[in-house]
Length: 401
Image 1 (cartoon, rainbow, N blue to C red):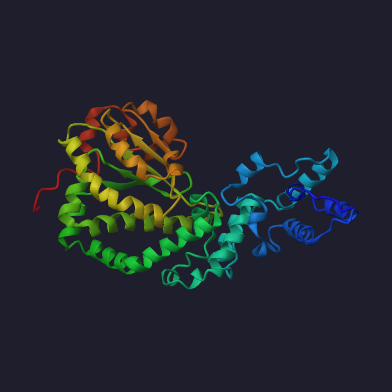
Image 2: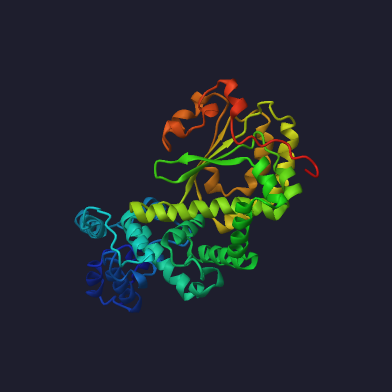
């Protein structure tokens, strides 16, 4: 009589258990494929992972941690097999040498970045990342026009951000990456940014002069990982006025220039330090200080240009936020937040820390990410006299100004 095999249970068996099933004549084609796959899965990270199908570990919409918690691989096994299976799964990590970052002069940036990722990620996440890299290559994205100057499709840090943005779902992550590259190509991002940088340095055009005079974003220092931290003084800016007078394209290019500079700095810092760094700390000052009038009016006018820009940033630069401090929020901020929150990815919402006026309510948390000297004096203290010299100032942008 043929023996019935529960394949769902077999999916979680250790490799040695397939010999057990074969004794009962159950070694059909599916079990053979499972056994081959499991043996391949046990290879250490530096062998054979390019051909690994990550869906053997998790369902499409699961992260590695969620899989471990919800579907234990060793369910139904005896204690001895559980212990042996756990040792096999942990073996690739435990056998690694102590981490010493010593890049060789003849190694290219992509190889160095993969070394960093292999050290930083757990074994399961690394398998999924390598599988996604293979999917990206098979989709032909290495030859995309947007990858001619920068190898976006080959950088593991970039691929990791897109995977995390879609909860490790390869199909959705690939779609998002394709859309991001298409947008870069169609918008001619590299060419326009190159022209904008030259225009910014020359300081001759009216739109650059407006942004230099009424701009409201400034780098205030570096975080503990050596990456730039930017202060956004939405409290005193007239973002709507800048978009009106300087144009929507200048509004977008100004923010894209900052983001591209941040990712370039992160790439350089990662290769120098050997630490995987893919996102940033931002500080938003929302205080209604009364130094620039029309707080509500300026806020409503800012909504249109930001509504245009936010979807672009989330598509082209997903998972860029490590933490965002929104400080000194007045009661009316709740009105703006209700408008903005639906446009912000849920994963990003979890990284946003909304704080009140008192410096004591947020300085301690900020020091987890930066040294205290990086915090601007007017934000590190409740002394209102410091507000008169706070930078950048922002201010109303006059019509035709």
